Amino acid sequence: MARKAQTGRRFNILVIGQHGRLQYEALLFMASLRAFSPTFAGRVIVAEPQPGPLWRCETRISGDVRAALEEMGAEIVPFDSAHFGQDYPHGNKIEGLSTLPEGEPFVFFDTDTLFTGDIANVQFDFSRPAASMRRHGTWPEEELYWPGYTKTWKSLYDKFGLDFESSLDLTQPDEYWGRYLYFNAGWFYGADPAAFRAQFLDYALAIRDDRPEELVLQPLDPWLDQVALPLVIHALGGGRPGPELDGLDGDVTCHYRMLPLLYARESDAVVNALEAVATPNKIKKLLKNYEPFKRMIYQARGKKVRALFDQNDMPPREKQVRNMIKKNGFWMR
Image (cartoon, rainbow, N blue to C red):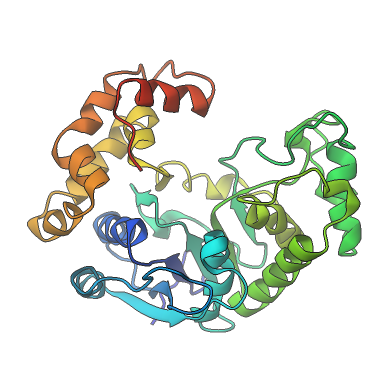
């Protein structure tokens, strides 16, 4: 049975899990959830894409990892990829919403998320969906002949009959990317996964298959889910997260994305949390099967990455961080 959050609403947690990197990230996710949110009694559903025509590789979680996830209380629920699959794996987070019980509020997290605090302390208002603001101006991309941020985003709102003006952050200047509703899809939540999925799938497919002419110069891979997500959240009556959600991407969760980046730029608390939950032998034995985790966590490559940087004076751009790690031969993903 799903637990009650402080808002009095029950909610489930969804992540995507499949063979390879994601199954090991899911192990860390579950281990950190159990360590730092010990009173969370809700359902944790690991949506697993099944082999089929849209996948040209093995997708099913391996037996030993499956057993460990289930021992920690995760439910592994299969789903079929009908629209995206291997050519656009980010679509898993759209199609995987089908594994959640209809009508029950949910929170989706990318598997490359680490809990460092208690999820019960986050006061979700599921009637007002939101998503992560830990993002940069990655989309749309500025081009020589493009129409600009306003015309690009407005063309999408017009396509779906949405009010564009009410989505703007008027404290930000015109034609600055931060003025426009844009999220990182590393976490998002809503009141009903069926309604959220229907809207998300409809918008993503419509953008992919029949984009407005203002988007003709814009890449949609890997950005399609993050282009559609703000439109979905706006259509469902949500928007930018308020201060009650500061724990997400704060002192409750960390969307680290890749272990070299975690060691390079996250706080000591995050590094300590990672290494604490990765210590038990049951977890260690499995995580060592994945080379980046083996080297970064257990063979101290992560500590060498961390020593390259002053975490209080990091390079301003992620690309600079990556380049420094690569230059020193420590990059892994």
